[in-house]
Image: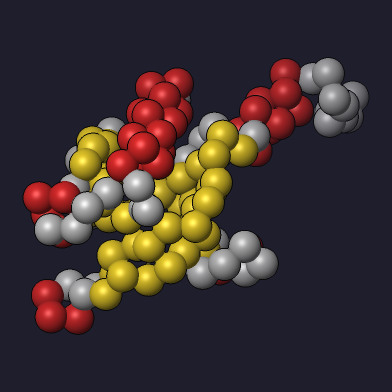
Length: 121
């Protein structure tokens, strides 16, 4: 018998859950290293499975994925010397993703949402 993807199957339910948008918005992301570091505006989408970013909302084909499995998430003002900065450190690869938002309240909202998604994985 052939497997069908109907709305009620466990697999279809799983896919729908992974595609669910938890939070999204525009932030600046720190790109480059050393003297070549620069803040670049990016569009971010936090889904139930990972954190995604792209140059803008319409360029989904250039979307990059940041896994939240085995990560540390927290403020990064001490690293950037910039207010309202936070980061995601991948403990496996030691890759660091640093973002900056407009207010402290929004920074804490993103951190809380990222930690909630990471905990649910």
